[in-house]
Image (cartoon, rainbow, N blue to C red; front, side, top):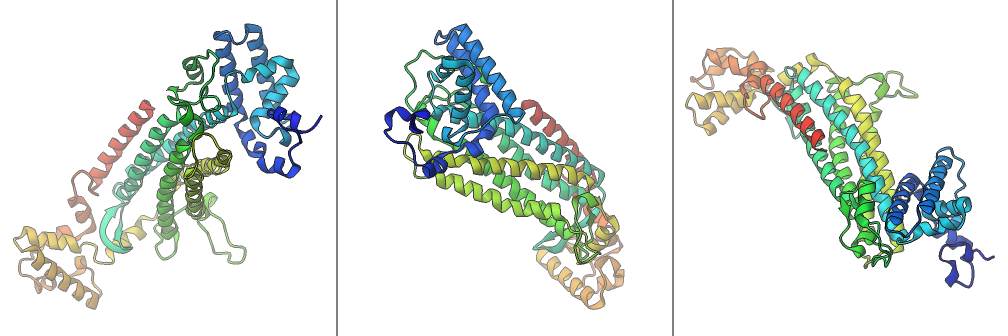
Length: 467
């Protein structure tokens, strides 16, 4: 018997596939990862076929029992994956036929590998999105709790990486949390479009068998069957959307990583990361390297690459299915794994961050971070803002010359720039006074940070409930 007749499609061919071409076109080395979803979809398909009379109950039971046994073989590492059988689908179907005979060949009634693989990927993506969401929730919860604890911890806020105004560490953490909130919403929105069932679209035009796609969709937990058979088997925009979410999320995690790397440096000395998230140097014994945030920062480019790969993969494909789509799985699988691992690392690490409060406070005292507060003070006293800006600029120039912060100057020193300045100016020139003055929703005042943390907890609980 030739190799060609061992294929599901071999009847039309007069010579076997070239050995290299067989390896080149096979996907089983990576799509075997979809085995659990493939079996899940096949069990639902067989159940539906029996309901519409395309299979007998005995045939259905034999198929389901056989598939369940195969699942066990795969989980125990006893399954023999075959490259000549090309993919996960044909490997499982061939093994099923070996186990239960000709009945195994009836499983493919009313479907194609085209709608089968599209269904498998959607089932896989749905499962992985739920795992990723759980890690994202864990990270957000830890970040909110840390922000609440550090609502009074003062640090410098930056623009252009230059000291700008004092903020609280809790406020800074809640800025990160806002990024993750939007990422979370994007993930759940993506899940809605993932949870649509292609099965029953067959190769591209549907099937002549009296299938009931609503039954299969209900059995598999899909929201609904896909409306158009051509679109159902050929598009991968749901995978692109997930990878877009992943790219935005990793961009946010990379920004956080950059700050963590800076903050752990001797030059900043704002935080300490526990040893379990760091490594040492093979030559410099004093080193404690923030490898986890550095690696997350590096993996961002990897996920960006997967997004571009999937976009490029789809951009020139005519309807309907094309072999190109075999190339969707490896970038998608790696994007899933990378996102899940990065989130797990952050969810473990962020609650364990130890702020060095004295270092943060001293850094906030440098760089004239309350200069804007002095300008606002003068405006409240009736000075035009542009004049106030000039007065403060002169005060800062004096401070640079005398190496004094604004809060360290005497009243007489400040009054040489404006007689409007009075003793009450020192209430706004302190770091505590500066942050406390920004006491409005979205501001850095400690009371506002605690209130924002409480709202964030409530919003996260609602989002989890909606999911």
